[in-house]
Length: 146
Image (tube, rainbow, N blue to C red; front, side, top):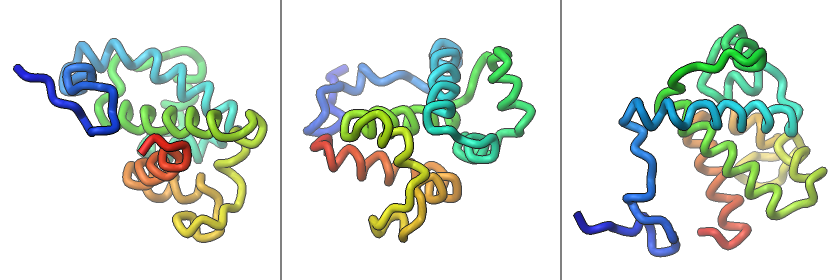
């Protein structure tokens, strides 16, 4: 099979992308994804309500179970996608700002029309995956990634 580029600006080929339809792939990625979102939630000082909403309205008991070290075997495609987007946002912020500002940015009022004067965290917790994609695109665009 001929490998196709994901986008002209991408250095990744389709064959490089994980097959999230495969339960083996999801099980392999789950521990790192959970560790990543646990660390991100600490760095951004997210409340349990904020992080559970970002992750697709998981229960608080599930979140606290993860925090106590009881990791799920398979996050599923939706949650892996959400965590991937969040980690991309985290990385883009760290590339553009000082660490202190990058970690506060999601909770600061923002005049960008995307956020309407509110904090990006409000937009992301209420907008689901489309909002996460929009924030990721905004930040990647600012750093020349799109």
